[in-house]
Every structure is written in C-alpha cells, then in structure tokens.
Length: 290
Image (cartoon, rainbow, N blue to C red; front, side, top):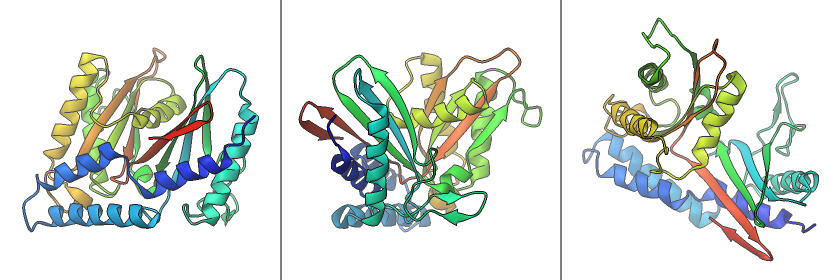
C-alpha cells in the first residue's frame, strides 16, 4: 500500500495555515456590511490580515490549532490500519514542524503528550468505505473556544417554549447563538443536527460542517430554516468577537437523523471564523488538494 505520510503532512499544513476560498470570500463580503470605523469592521479587517500573513508564512491561523477531525473515504482493498498509522505519523511530524500545537492532554492525569497523539481517540478519525477508486481524506481543525459554546438540547424544552418541531429547533439554535455572545470567536458557522442519540447527534452536527458554505440542505424546509437562522442570528447585533455589528453567523448547516420516540435531541456545533477544513484526493499517482 502506498505511503501517503508526506502528502498528509501537506494537508495538515494547508488546513492549519490557509482558509478555503469559500470561507475567505464570505469573510471579505462581511466587511462591507459593517460600518466604517466600527469595532466590528476593525475586527474583520484584522482577521483578514491574519489570514494573509498565516498563508504567506505557513504558520497557524490561530494559536489553538484545534482538535483534528479526519474523514477518510477509502476504496475497497485499502487498509484502514495502515491509513491510521500514516495519519498519526503525519500529525506527529506536522506538530514537530509547528504546523500544529501539541493539544492532546490526558484528561485524567492532566499531562500533555507533546506530540498531538492521545491513544486511539486523538486525532478523531472516521473511516467510510466507498465504491469508487479514489481515496479522499478530509480534515477539519476545530478550536476549543468554539467547541466550548456548542450546545445540546432535549426537546421539549419548556424554559424556551421549544416543542418537538422545526419551530422548536429554531428557538434552541438561536438560544445557543445568544448564549455564545461572541465567545466562540464570532463570526461563526453553525452545524445543527436534529435527532439521533446524544452521541450521534453531536457527531453529525460536526460532519455537516465539512460541506462548502452556501450549499443548502436538499430538504426545502431545512434549507429555508438554514437561511432563516443565519439571518435571525445576525439580527441579534452580537457581531464579530461580540463587539456588536451585523455579522454574527456566516452560515448555518442542518442535517436530520432518525430518533427514538422517547428522544428529540438538537445538537449545535459552533465553528469559529477560523473555519479550517481542507481535503486531499488521491487519484492513482496524483494527489489533488482542495
């Protein structure tokens, strides 16, 4: 089996130091929506300077290089054991090169491993076998600050008047945005999962964030809710970094899952403006980065 360790190191470097074009475009557009001389506009302008410097110097966009979340779509016949070894070796080497900060801390004994590897759980790697011939590795780096303001709700929630329907979903998602108050490094991107159990609901709320900004759910009702939540979040006036303004949320992504009759979970994963996600596709001997 082909050794892709060096190619995965490059994927990590690009993800950590260079935002994808769709994210950068949305951030640039947001600057024009804020008042000249305002704290909101100043924050966005500083963000753009940071993005440009990070890309030019191959340095992390944020000092918190986040939890590495890998989605691996592999053809029949590839070894997931070997792919996992290569991903872990690449992450360790990328940490040595300072593309990543050592982030893996043993929660029981409060010790940092120093190499970004923490047992089998860090980094998080999800494997999915596909029928095609291409290998696709997607990576998202999710910072701790935005992870801290994610929330999960069990409906009905009487304190918010939220029932078990899309109207109730809307209420709890807006509650999550209001409670974040810019602490998740706004402007943010919302990943929302409706249904599932507590675990699968949170996982899917992150997975939906791998899709490009502006793409809508195929279900027209969910697509409409995505647009509405982004609009209403921006009407709260929280703004970039909580300084006030018109740009609190850049986009909203929603996915729906099956659930047990007794449960109705809504999970909200909040992604900060440093929306670091990239992918590499292996087509024969060719490696393509997006």
